[in-house]
Length: 125
Image (cartoon, rainbow, N blue to C red):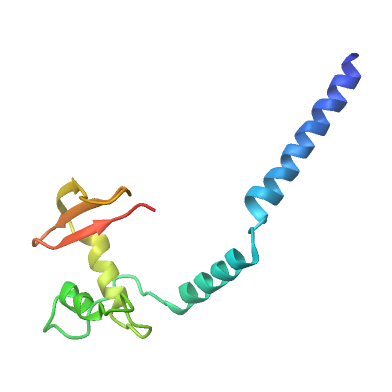
């Protein structure tokens, strides 16, 4: 094969790889169900206007007590939760005192003990 033909073949292969990346990995959302899930997630994300450095409006409870009251049989937190920003801020700023690998199950999870003895579970995926 001549050099010119090799360059043309190499360019064609690179072009096809570029198209595959754009359509299969980046732009192709997959099935209609996954696109619907992504739209629902983006809608939920947009509705959660979280303020930086948010604080609880009442001082009678810690953020952990507020979050513990949300958990129900069918939801982890209710749709209308103005204290969510304060709880997430407390999670983001609390110092981790101890970390351990979570127990039971097949998925990786980390058990973290935060400042003040609050236990949280972190699942990377």
